[in-house]
Length: 159
Length: 231
Image 1 (spheres, rainbow over the protein chains, first blue to last red):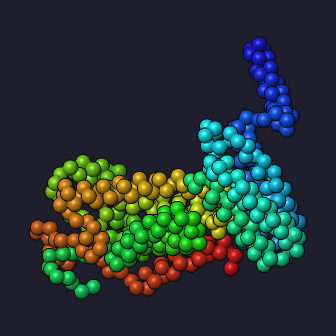
Image 2 (image 1 turned 135 degrees about the vertical axis):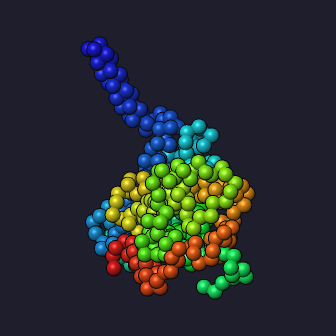
Image 3 (image 1 turned 90 degrees about the vertical axis):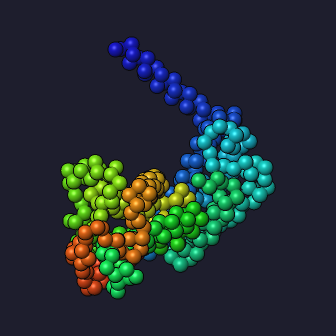
């Protein structure tokens, strides 16, 4: 019993250490394709959740300025880091489950252009959210959503 | 209302609302699937609201409609269902005035699953947080994503039920030489041997006031839901 417990603890410790090492070295050494895909999924999920915060405020008709700005900032800052999470070898051919299309790597310029378009709209969203004006936030939400959608249409598998 | 080409050889078994409901649902489910595939979410939501209105109407019509529309006339116990299943292989046409004991449960299942589909859709959020059902802002992003997954899964259940339904109709057409499709269009079925017109269908009368009231409640519920209960 105790030996099993000890073994389990040791395994837990080892995996925690491995996770730490992986996290620490991610800046320098290339992380595994699955870790990269997981990281960008998590990023997009955060952005999606933040988009929903804005959408919910628009639906309810009452803007919570602080929450709207926070959500817009999440979208802009997380979004800024996302393009780096598409290194070569993290596409569908890597075997990792991903909706990222090969076009991301064959049309790098087009992909980058989409990201800069997104960033412009995302930064604008932060500024517009700070006004607390529902009409302007609604308009910018559409513009930002359009930027998201046009990139997804081109570079994300439709499932 | 007026009798067709063969006035004495048919009997009315479906009222106009049951038939309209049936065929509208066929079109709307197809359209919902298509608009969903096209990511035409504005039309997809509209289609869903219309389905919700129709389902609410049908449930009410199951209490206030004419005899063959009422749940009390076609929701039968396991004994009746089993007896019916045992008789299914017989090629002697079962001249049913309304849903048969097994078909009655298929109606209940269909209504329940379609309602589940609509409810899941109301809370659904897409992965980008861009599109959502009208009640999605009452739940978290994660819950909305789960609702969207349920929405997708339940569609497969609908497809399965539709497949069983169509198979049963074809079984009747080929094996029992009974055209249920025509009956669902015209509302009438041919009289069986020895049946006297006017005596078999039972009370097929329905009230215009009840029909309008049931439709109005269905439309009101769908409208209220579509606004996210913000009037």
